[in-house]
Image 1: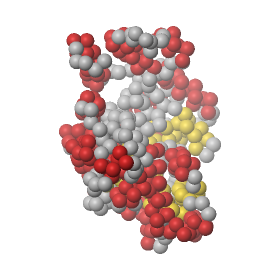
Image 2 (image 1 turned 90 degrees about the vertical axis):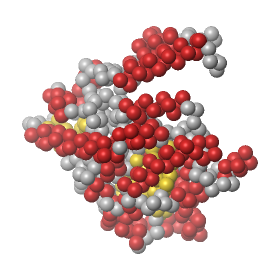
Image 3 (image 1 turned 30 degrees about the horizontal axis):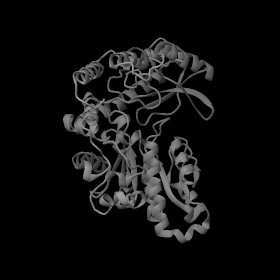
Image 4 (image 1 turned 135 degrees about the horizontal axis):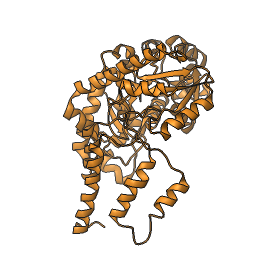
Length: 449
């Protein structure tokens, strides 16, 4: 299996040619899921003692398995938060795998870590964090949030562990915070104190202050959201950060989707206060045009992350006994792919200005389609969009109406737009991050309602 032979050369050529066609394709279908029964019928048993051969396996992937997966970088994929990797980032993802690079330690991957750290330093500077800030690329926002909050709790234990008599440790966050915060709390066996946001969906400093006064020293972290998944709402980061002058807590900013909006001059003002964060995350596989999977986790003081996450074992002494920057020390992981390299290559290729332009285009398109929705009879904006998520209702529609419409859109290969809801009322939403999504794409979807 590992020898370089004529068969191996043919296999590599086969895979690279398919990859080339897919990367350069401009008309990849949206596609849709199939049932397990249908996949069994079409693909059959693929894992057998003698193998089925590279040509057969790739043909099954290209013609059966891949078409049963929705194309997440399609311009009419508008559900959840899409991905839209640049061609450079996607192509370089192949290079990362082909290079057998290990991204967990400086000893084994110093070149890769150096490049990743340049990207992290650029992000930290964009967010106003000090030059000494740093971190690591992890799998996604869920792991990024968990790792940051573990570091926050360990920091609180070191600083005021004697105050544990107040009960379990607590995290204060918006009632509309991402589900990963509650998930992290369950893993850590700590409590979440949900705080109701204001009518616009923003968590404010006044509301956080009430929670801090009520729960006192048991609160070790406050999580502010910089672009909620459902609405793209940015909490009032400045008023929340100002509380650090009076209270002792770790401020974590969950910007998995929205913090990339700070790159645009049109939205930068919304994020005032993030420069005071103790940690922050942003997912390049969302609005920074990298392939799955990559979340940038940044610490104001990277040593806090290192103290919380460095693993100790005799076979690791050669790594942990040095001061070199090993990414495995900064999150809840050890073995690690150098997942920040595709973003590095894309940024190095196109430049930061191209990223600013692409993010700004999404913001402008969101505003344009919001105005279009307002102008149409029978449509209602649920909230004014702050970033690039536009949530709206078709008046009189029930949850079943949205579900039937969504299914029809996908069956007809028009778009992938799923039903959503807010405060018990059904709605739907456009999540716009793909620079190839057009105003005409969106209006044609509205026309089907």
